[in-house]
Amino acid sequence: MKRVIIVGAGVIGLLLAKRLARDGIDTTVYESKRRVSDNAAKASGIFSKDGLSRLDVGWRGALVTTLNGATIFAGGESFRVETAGDKAYVLERGKFVELCAKEACEAGAGIVLGKRLPKEQILEMKKDANNIIVGADGAVSMVASAVGFPPIGEHILTYKAEYEGAQVPDPHRVELFFSNKIAKRFFGWTVPYSRTKMEVGIGISSLSKKTSTAAFNEFLESTFIKNHISSAKKTAGYASIIPLNARKKTVIDNVLLVGDAAGQVKATTGGGIIFGAACAGVAAGAIIENVRNGAPLLSYEKMWRKRFGLDLKMHRMLHGYYSRMGDRGFAIAIKAAKLAGFEQFFSKYGDMDKPSLMMKRFFLRGMSK
Ligand SMILES: Cc1cc2nc3c(=O)[nH]c(=O)nc-3n(C[C@H](O)[C@H](O)[C@H](O)COP(=O)(O)OP(=O)(O)OC[C@H]3O[C@@H](n4cnc5c(N)ncnc54)[C@H](O)[C@@H]3O)c2cc1C
Image 1 (cartoon, rainbow, N blue to C red):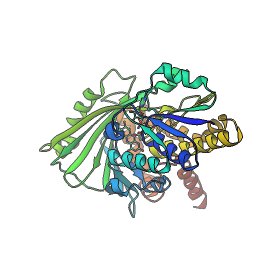
Image 2 (image 1 turned 90 degrees about the horizontal axis):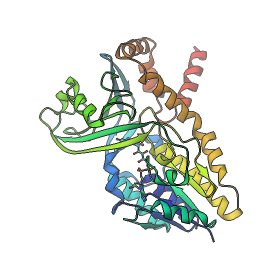
Image 3 (image 1 turned 90 degrees about the vertical axis):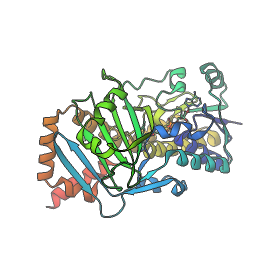
């Protein structure tokens, strides 16, 4: 009888475990931390409303605030997107992952906490053809390196901090900042939690010569951020990492990679949950077919690339394009986009997860004019 071993109890590993266990597949998740939430606060918790509704998790217990707009600042210009209703949510990541774990357990999956599977044990498990091993162990995947998956190449190094007593300009609006003056591929953000609590964060290329904390400290010096947090108290700060590319291979023999371990992340925003979860759904289908009918696990690779590969590539292309622009280039691009009516277009059709859908609408709109 086949069994599934998932390495990593992040959101993606847990969603996969729930789906498999619900279908009667023998599933165990191994997590190196003592609590599933121990790793979670390093990331932000912005999710599109549509994306979240597709996740099949009772997430409401983790809701912090709703979002209906974003302002992008670059090269001294700003670009404002405003939606008619709530477009996205901010969730508390620790609570969210706990909800995912609860649902995985209720579905019948086993979760072993405080157990870091060493490389040798993974390779030993791989030898048994009755085992299906899933690396859901994040951006620096030990499963991927142990089994010999192709590397990711470039990552985004992040630092985020939380502030209490802040001057939050709008509790339903995120702010994004771009400037290559601070570091290669630099972007910064603020996320509101309430009228007085907010998160400030930055990301830079792992190929940059700066550390993420140095870039963060520089970002704090900008007038925008200074105004927000001049009298605020920093309550937490975390460094982390986001993969910038999908791996060239995500299945080798009886081993699969999902989520950040596979690099299934939007390069534009670093958002990985909605894509990762959709890919985990594809992985679940392939695993169930393999256990029941002996179908090849390789169908996972083909299927997730077919369904989501184009959007991931578009995010990557977009990221590559704007991260090469200097501040002057940003200013010109923003001015031109405003003149062309893109603020209104994004406000109406903006889709955080599916730029391909947005482009399709753009071309249809253009033709109908
Ligand atoms: C600063 C920042 C902000 C972000 N903001 C957003 C956002 O707003 N929206 C969004 O959708 N995404 C966001 N992301 C990305 C998102 O957090 C990731 O895509 C998501 O967490 C990936 O989930 P995962 O389950 O694949 O991996 P992870 O969440 O990294 O979970 C991997 C788990 O595996 C465990 N593990 C690692 N190695 C081992 C081992 N050898 N044995 C056992 N366990 C192991 C880890 O402890 C961890 O619990 C952000 C990321 C960062 C860094």
